[in-house]
Amino acid sequence: MYNKNRHPLLQEHIIIHESAHLFLNHRLRKITLPTRVDESEGILKQSSVRFRSHLIFRDLELDMDGVDYQQEEEAETFARLFMALVHQHKRHQDLVSTQNVNLFPPFSDER
Amino acid sequence: MNLFIVPIIMWWTYYVVRLFNHARDEQFLKMPWMYLWLAGYNVAWCYTLNHFWVLERLESSIFSFTQFPIASLLFVSVYLIQLTSFLWMVQRAFTQLLRVVFLVLVTIYAIAVGAHLTQLPYVTLYRIDIILIYISTLMGGFTLLYILRKQIRFPASHIEFAHLCWFSMFCILSSIGLGLITLNAVAGLPDNLTVVETPLQAIGYSLNALAMASLMILTGPDTWLYRSIYPYRLWQYHKLLQMKDFILHHIEIDPIITHSSSEKPLNIEIAIHETMVTVLDYYPYLLGNDVLRNNLATIEANSQDLETMLFKITRLRLPAPD
Image (tube, rainbow over all chains, first blue to last red; front, side, top):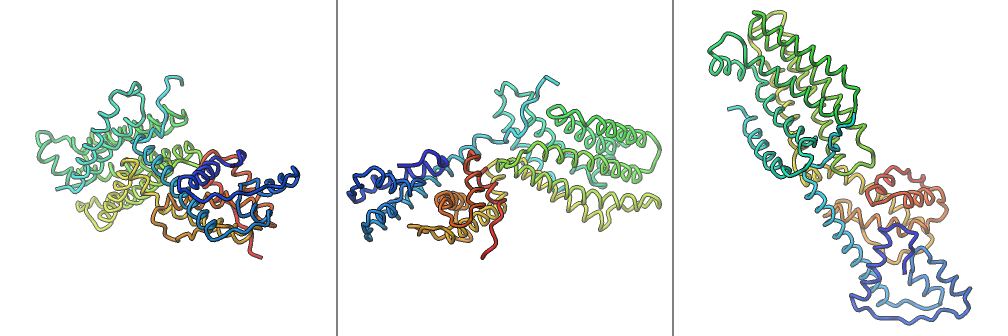
């Protein structure tokens, strides 16, 4: 779950973060949202910027244990390092492929 | 042996490889980089000839068959042709405002040729060359700097920024260096002194060597050029770090994960990326800082990539502490 109105940099980070939970075979927690639509929407709305498990757990009056915190930290670290390395590799490719950068455009015959 | 010879050979060899790399380019003859390459090669020769004793030796060995000061004329010609072609390139690509500059350069060249046709002492000719070269270099160099600055739209890419930095460095160092050499030449002109190599001249040569090094870095591979702007990236990172620390201290929720940020990160790019993600992640929760939150939201909405955001965020002013 991610907000499409946020910057692509954050969107891709969140996607990798949530995927990291799957890659790292994290424990699943079953949560039950209130059956009333306005209540469940309210819970989701307060974390509309990003789906934050600790905020939802708080609003559902559930506790996060040590394993939950550790898993969040693992997923976050995974996402940060993964995306940073991807961007670093992309930058390196750009630098190598544009040797002697065409800072100036080609000459035009039109004067 | 002239110390400039070794870097010239290395430089030229390096660029020959590049020349062949671009040989299949359909716009081969229209790409300004080729003219930059030629210009860089030419500048190297200019610096080699920019020594009185080198010119004297050339006159007495290679050009000993004539009394006409060929080496001296070659010296001033290489410089002026170089500058003219360089400016022509830029003018053709971007602007038509440089006609006056060309006119002045042609006039200077005419004066130089005229001086060589007279029977002036060799050392006086050298001094006149130096003065003319100084005027034309100042004019050409700073015209190019002005155009380069206008051409680059901020936020500039790393490579564009590095070009601007190193070319500015080249202009400043060569102006001061040539200025000292010119001062030395002017000082010796009235008395017709035969000794050219003075401490002032030596300092001028040293600064010219540093200017030359700046130009070599400028024309180096992009990967090297990119590393050369590390101090600027570190400054940007610290500004971003200040923003992150401010946000984390003024948000309404407890961040579930707080990554400790190092003042001197092992990898500056990874550190910038991580810090930017944290800023983006948490600024919507800023409490009581609507202006800053709105500014950050505007930056996020109007910036295509990380670098644009970084450029804009580093220019934001943080609210004063309560």
